[in-house]
Length: 510
Ligand code: GLC
Ligand code: MG
Image (cartoon, rainbow, N blue to C red):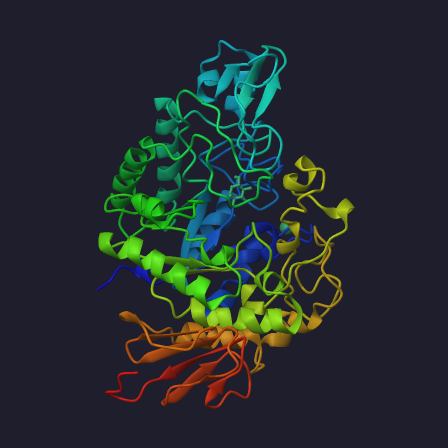
């Protein structure tokens, strides 16, 4: 029997925006726990929780000040245990986020490092003297601006690939490696089913910290040329794999490897290393049949020879919502619905981001509401990621749509009533129902392309054919039983921006 994670569907819960239980306007663990039946009914295999650890919140939890506790705004360790217990009871796995590249600047280690340059904790970070009155090298932060900030008291600079409030750890320091093994064990002992490793390709930096020309302007997802992706990573992940495999229950390591080159990604998931790596290639492609076919081919070509499972991602908390990326409005939504059938038919593990099943669009926020450090560090040149992080609408009633009894931490659009869970549940034509139906009958088995016209994608998994008309005039459907279509009214052919699953008649070859 193949391991569960090789063809699972994991649902990303952005903790502060899923469900609020205590009226403070911020989602929390008890809120998530109360909505686990929704996830079970949706039909996913498990959830990935974004960071809920104590954090000053400069990057909404990706700046951790204590790796082995729960931030009071999200609940307590008791709430976490109850959430895991309930999830397991419902047959849902729980994967947690771990943020090893950097701590919060409020972490006691960094406070010690700043308070006293002789303190042993200083060596957990990357402090260096400057060069010609400026930073030690030319590296830039993924959030804009230089990757170094000056520690005025000592005159040295410290490295932060993200915000200054997120100082990078020095993974060449064995103490750092030992500490994180303890962190992994802490959560494994509490029953988590695995970890999503934040910025997994960046932990080790080239020891000489040499200058590198990065493309400018920096975008979120360009391959990182800065001296990351060091070979030491593979030894580290082999060690982590042993550690995780030492536990029962088939627990997993999923790396956030922000790279476009599939062959490089493959190195991270070769035998004995990470179980899975996010594959962001589809997430960066336009609605374009040839480009998407190419992504599928390149992914399979890199992973199949080493026996690694593919993953597919169209949305997460760092990117613009899919219907908006696909042009917005009716077409954007139609394409996102078709993409859902594509996503859930591809061979491997799929990641869904909360609200993707509702077809939510990116929210336009006024500048004064924005919170993402990207917006501030680029002086507004990059709007940042707040627009995909607006809380979920559960009921039809504005302004908070059942998300909270208080005021949501980001305002929710006045137009979200029809997109809410309550409005979509039970509606045979809604995106929520489409997602549910697709999840209840995901195809499996070997994958093969079937010949089809330009602008279309047609492939087969055992007896199920997935047909996607991206932008051809019309795509006639193969004979057989129509299992599911992304738009109402489909009978035997697909207009552009639609997809369908068809059960091929017994013995048919196309
Ligand atoms: C990852 C997270 C992102 C965060 C960054 C820094 O890419 O997905 O949200 O800002 O790491 O931790
Ligand atoms: Mg709350």
